[in-house]
Length: 226
Image (cartoon, rainbow, N blue to C red; front, side):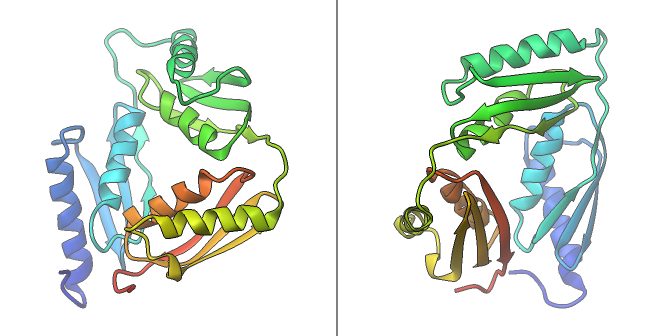
């Protein structure tokens, strides 16, 4: 349990530090951690975009963390620098080899290590998978996901019913605390969840529904939520 009062943020900070040390991908990398009322800011410099994301995920795993602002800077340092054409070629291979990504309509632009994904995909989940496929590639400094979801229109009531049913099927989710609104392919999630893991599961459940183009996350994290 977290201690009350002024010690809470300090304890969260210590827990994140221990989680960084425990995570084999992060280890002894120097990353700054500031915590204010459960809001975490990460700073510092790392050599890969994948490590930046790993630090963000590790912070979210810690009890008491409400939100994470990831201000870590990626500074790629290689004895033989990776060029943008090499990154572009690796990105294309990653998209084509990933069976969860429909890459036919995905195009990329690489500038100084920054990858922009554009084009269209059939679902919001495809958009997410495409980003996951490229963020661990050597030389990548960051990923901007500008993919558009293009799918057949589905009745708003059907989209909402499918999402609510998906939430109710998952034993670890407290579906009664979550409210779902749907308009023009945009899903708005509100209510409260107990931690980041539950929040992520709710977002993934909504993203899997057909007819969803975007998910607006208005969920609150409340460790005391029933």
